[in-house]
Structures are given as C-alpha cells and as structure tokens.
Length: 120
Image 1 (tube, rainbow, N blue to C red):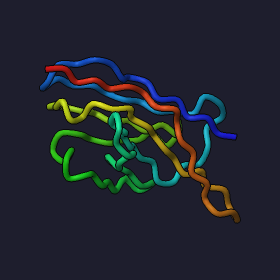
Image 2: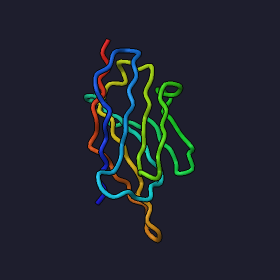
Image 3: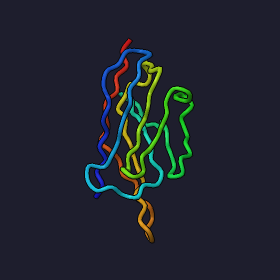
C-alpha cells in the first residue's frame, strides 16, 4: 500500500508564495502521471496541475502562469510552486500519483491533503 504525504501548506497573504511537496512515506515506486487537486470549502475537488513521467505538464486555466508543477522521479515526489496566490486558491490541496507495475494496470493513490489559506 502506498501512502503519499503532502507538506508545505500554510497561511499566506494575497500575492504570496508557497511550495507544496508530496512524497511516499514508505518505499519509492515507479510513478506515472502525478498531479495536484484542491478542494475549497463547500466545493467539489478540482484539478490543478499534472505532470507525466516524461515531464509534460498540464494546468487548470485558473492557475496558468502562477503555479508550476515539477517532479523528482527518483523519489516518487511531486511539487507545486504557487506564486501570486489569490483568496480563491484557498483550500485543501491533494496530491495523487500513479504507481506503475509491469504487467498490471496503473493504480492511483492520493495523499490526505494539506491546507492552503490565502488571506487578504
């Protein structure tokens, strides 16, 4: 069983920056697509950003130009650099990662989330 642990959340003022990290608490694994989602209070979880094993990235329109996703495949870790934070970026941020096992379908695991609060 894979357990992903997020860190780096906190309270920041509008326009500030945060860097989120996500890595497995146990053994490193072969990761496929890795990503970040977020959930604001009373809202559904939404896509933020994703990165493939080859380094291709995709972002939600609301964060393009402000957020940057990166990964360290040797650590099965994924990062989210967030700049120019806005109040609407407030929420719980979750990472996910595909575990790739030869001969088996990929399995997606989720972290438990880290709170990001942007105050004005």
